[in-house]
Length: 166
Image (cartoon, rainbow, N blue to C red; front, side, top):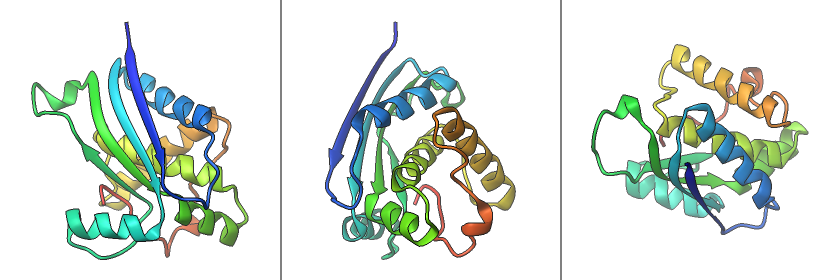
């Protein structure tokens, strides 16, 4: 029997949240990796708050799209993850700004950030071009299945901030 708890907190006004869709996205990603138990806390914030968090935890005073934190106690083999406890912080203001500048949907961009943060918690990384390629392919695969289409387009992201556990 699976038990997934999802807490969503909204601290911004740039993007209207559809909590049902957000829960569906998180649940879908977890199921794809066989995660049966999870406690996922999602905070949707603006530029100022995510910049504060980036500086506090990573020593860099810059805005970013997503930060993810593993809240699980280190136990067992991390490659055999069946439970997830994490906090994902996404920048709703950045999603809205990106969508406006590139004539896309802010909701789809926000879901990209959510999936990106979850994938980091599931062992994906984007520090090299090869790793990033695998991660973005997986993001698009999931987002297409969820009805958002192919959201991550590398040609539009060349000047985007660094993505990662940052």
